Length: 142
Image 1: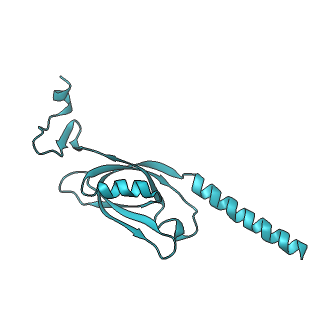
Image 2 (image 1 turned 60 degrees about the vertical axis):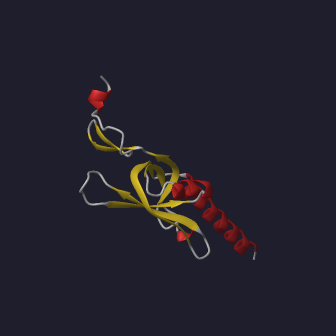
Image 3 (image 1 turned 90 degrees about the vertical axis):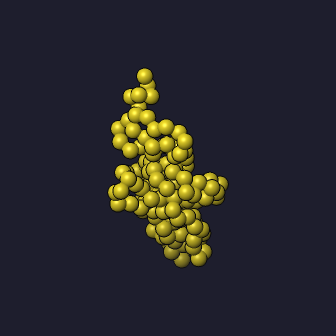
């Protein structure tokens, strides 16, 4: 009886240690820029914010989608307020989380920054404000 209890406690501690490791270690981290086109609070029991960022590298190119998860409600409000604007999302990729209770994706967004200009190529940007002139970076620095 005592050996079974010891084995059970050891198993629970091992599982808890794995979750702590998987939640605190990042496989990768980075930035993605685009337009948040879908964002919702999902889940039967474990509610998480799930979103979709449309990535466009050049006008007329095929849209790539970046699926992401947000745990922080304050950050989720910032992302909701930025819908329809170009943003840059900082994310951390977590691997080894065994259930979808932590999120539908491996990419957990930790920060959002609104990006006012759209880069079209090296030194050329398209301002998001229609009245602002677009100038190459070399002309702007002179």
